[in-house]
Length: 247
Image (cartoon, rainbow, N blue to C red; front, side, top):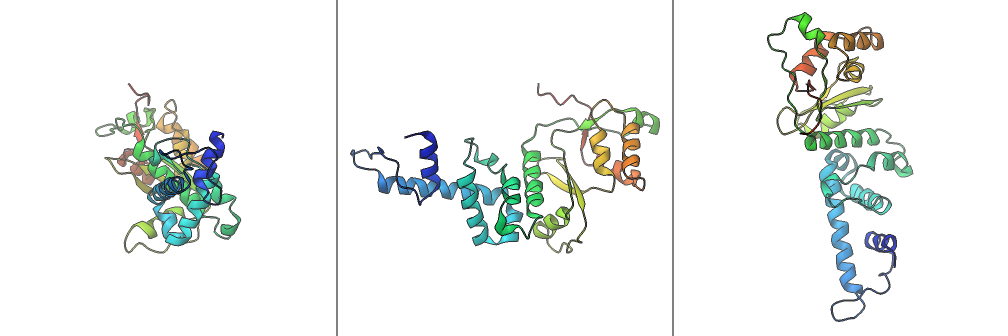
């Protein structure tokens, strides 16, 4: 019996108990294996429910459990850390034909993964621009903090997330939205990126000064609101001057 066969049997109740498995009394471990298999499946589904609360709300509890069951059979965990399980969900959704009419789900899953990545990212000292004159600020060469995540989407993923996670949030408009995820203290927070914000973020590599990032932003989006972009990035702990290396 191979490890692959054993894993497949654990995740799929339609498969028989792997040959050779015995209980402590030396009898075939059919019932014990069924209980173990059910516990494993339930734990993985629970991990996906925790990791993708917006997907669960969009699909409904029963439909999400069906999706999660199919996902875990196709994508068994590769780590013991269940908090990290589900990285393959966006790609799975893109190829899942029954949900082809809901193409935004994959990007919603990417946003939820970005929030999780931000939560588990290393700490860093945020860029403190207090007291700097404009010339000194423009000369700084920051990079995105480890906890900062940037997503671009042709769907209103911020509005969808907001509508499902915040009470009384407005219904999203059917427009493309980019999202900045930052972590000021402990909990990550998604922010709607102003036009040009993603280009600004992409230019911040630790070597390019803020002035150069603004030029890249304006080249990509001539109507970008630079004041709004700087206010968001400087006020949300999105940037750091550190190398990003863990000591």
